Amino acid sequence: MNKNCCTKVLPAIVHPTKCCVNHTCQNYIVPEIHPSHTTTVNHENFIHEHYFPHTQSVVNKVSNQQVMMPGSGPMAGGPMSGQMSGPGFGPRPGFGPRPNFPY
Image (tube, rainbow, N blue to C red):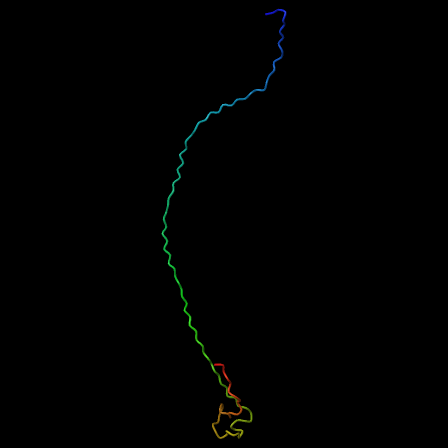
């Protein structure tokens, strides 16, 4: 070493700490059982078909009234006074024309 050269020691520069992480691993096997079952269901379907036959008929009803008009009955001495007597047997002229039904 040269005696004419002087060496000076400077303060140390401290850098941030570099962190390292070591990982260890241990594997565990856990058996998990998933059972399954299949059921076959056979379906039988009965189809009930309902029928409703329908018929139709027509009924024609005719009514009749015998009306005794005042002053024209068998007791009034009209043209038919000598024929049948009693309710419903009055003279025809008081009744008018026969109705014309549409059938």
